[in-house]
Image 1 (cartoon, rainbow, N blue to C red):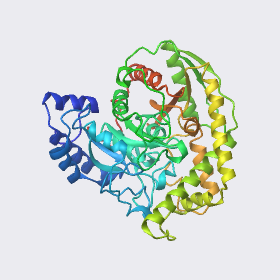
Image 2: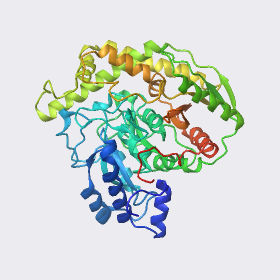
Image 3: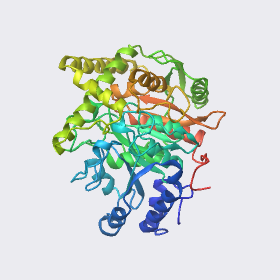
Length: 478
């Protein structure tokens, strides 16, 4: 096995190792070979940690663990790996080198995952297209002129190109689900508080952002979440406990679910016909599988929610800049931070304590509205994005025209951020490809704390409409 993983998902690779059919060293060699072959085309892996990974395999690989010996990549945002820069896609953060692992990375290592690099992300995760000035754009393996999404766009691209079956991501406004849709892979955002954010954060983006993974298979997502979830000492809050391992939910009969679906964006932006068709066809599929599907949606002020989310994100971006400035003793220069991000983070200085408190009240109020709505439904279904993958350059952060940037940004992603506000688990499932061969995901969200229903439904959809054999033109397995 010199490159590619021949259709094996992460669970299957761990089984090969457990049986002695392949060694961790051989899998790492294959992952490195795949990266070297394909990354020049897609620019998804921006930090190579080959020596660190080899040392981990030789000296620190645990004797057991559900994913022992499986190669893995971290997103270059928030997930700290001691001694390796966490740049957050920013020229200002190239010297941000932690002296410790984050709790999530510790849990990944304890599960046996072999981390051998970091993937590309837009600066501070502030764009849904991965085009940072620091590293350049990540290209979509389905069409190299298109975005891979963001902000976990590097992760989405490596999984789509079959460099790896799974990679770490984070999601503060759709940043796992958007690249999952753009790249034709599975992406689940867990419940707020399901995975730890410490020790550097009690919560990220005031609870909007959580971390997990993008995967080829549903069961990989479940097994990785089993390995990482649960509170850490000092966490400000925790997600409701699971009833059983998520790996046991995949393949379990979901029963007859009551599914609310909508194709209308609360913000009023238009939705592309391909994205409408993806939901309409999926609604028919769900009915064929025995579920009750009803066209309806919760009622809330989309514009008010959008403004609240923008204020919270802007304040948190500025807080990150200030924290790094204090740690390094230097202020960012004109060319250290991209122009759109400068202006977006600058909103943080304009936000008073009252503005911030009102923004939190808004997202909590929307959470209660949708929480009541979920007492009558098991799942909400919408498009993941409002348009097929955008052309690279459509979301340009090297501009002073922030209003136009935000108009383009939120015109692309009107459906995802609401579930960051409410904290509910949500997923993008790769169920549709348009006439140009571009993937378009369908989003499902369940009640707060109920990843189990999503894993059951996702497993059923994966069996009914398998996607793992659909590979983009740029991949390492063909």
